[in-house]
Amino acid sequence: MKRYESFTELTRSFALREGTALEFLDEDGMLVKVSYPELSVRIMKRADEFFKKGSGTDTVYATHDLNSVVDLFASAVACRCILVSNPMMPDKVLEEANAGADRLICDVTVHAGDGELLFFTSGTTNRNKVVRLSSKTLCRSAWNGQQMLPCGPGDRILSILPLSHVYGFVCSLLWGLAYGATVCLCGDPERRLEACRIFRPTILPAVPSIVETMLRTDAFNPELKTILIGAAPCSEETASQLAARGLDVYIGYGLTETSSGIAITQGMDDLDAMHLCPDTQIRIEPDGEIAVSTPCMMKGYLGLPEIPKGSWLYTGDLGWLDSDGRLHIQGRKNDVLVLGDGTKVCCPEYENDLAEMSGEHDIALIEKDGKIVLVAGAGADIESLREAVEEYNKTMIMSQQISDIEMFGRPLPRTITGKLRRYELDKLYYQ
View 1 (cartoon, rainbow, N blue to C red):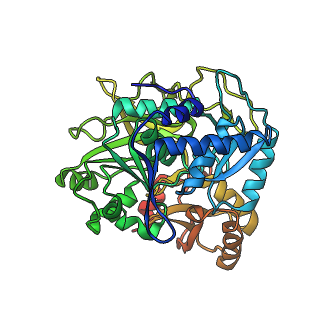
View 2 (cartoon, one colour; view 1 turned 30 degrees about the vertical axis):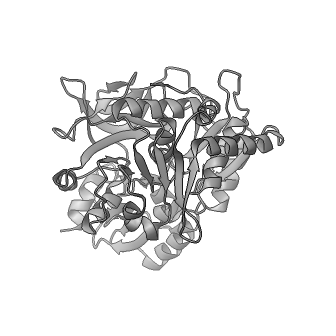
View 3 (cartoon, rainbow, N blue to C red; view 1 turned 90 degrees about the vertical axis):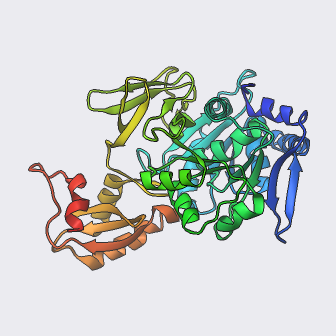
């Protein structure tokens, strides 16, 4: 199985293939098909336009349309840096990221071939961090996925995940294009529940919240055989319901910093045990934190020094390895909420910012019904908090905004040194 080294090499391979690369609905609701050779021509033509601009940075809104896909590939082929964003990203955040990217001198060589792709982390370790990835590591991630869960010309992959997130980009776009599947683009949330009926996919990469909604509404098509779930924990009940419908379920674990995949389940016997992707190493630290070394590692964070080759990444996740070397995830070491759609929220950063804005310090974030809720201890000034939250939400994309404020009725649970007992808060709050 071919392992591509760059988007340039991959795009050139499209010209030699048969079959449909992309399918999508146009503005009139008509189905449009783009062949692999046509996609290659479009990318190379657009790359010529980018080449004329010289070195620099392009902000590409990674939406589910042909022009966006072409621009993502073409800008990299033209050796430019690509800030992979979405239309909901606040202007201030984009301005800061662009300023940082403009100062970045891309390490573009003949061997590397392409420019860098810059992805936002969704708050894995800190809000608005930007991860520097190369097309080589992204292609390697797609190859890793192919070794663990093969796809090919007979497959149709439904692409409904945000392409501005690495999981969506690699698993619902790049993986399929690299190995000859047809990628069906459907980014309209209002059409998501009918997408299976329209496109008849065989493979569906998704997050738990989407899968659960599709289960409730009986939205799956009979041709669908495989569901890949990532970005957030999947309940045993959901996995069992999917298996009962005859679907093969795969649970994946990965990070933006590692170009997505680190490990994935194999078979339905134990959906808590994940096999490591090729050439991936896991080390469990004394406190239980998962550290990872992978050929898909990022170059570093934008604005910070590059990390040395072969470095280990401390994930902030807790886990253990069984006697067969399979990875089991136990939860988060750091104070991060993981919502049902995979959005990660760095709680201390929110809380510190809101405390400074409102003057209220006995506050904490929790997840409630898939949304972010701010909980305030007894005696807090609710109006000051509402004003602070309203202003703060203006700096956040919709999925990372605080939806409500709740009064706790007594001081929040803390240690003798004043550190929040976050692991106790949910239990106490719902009593």
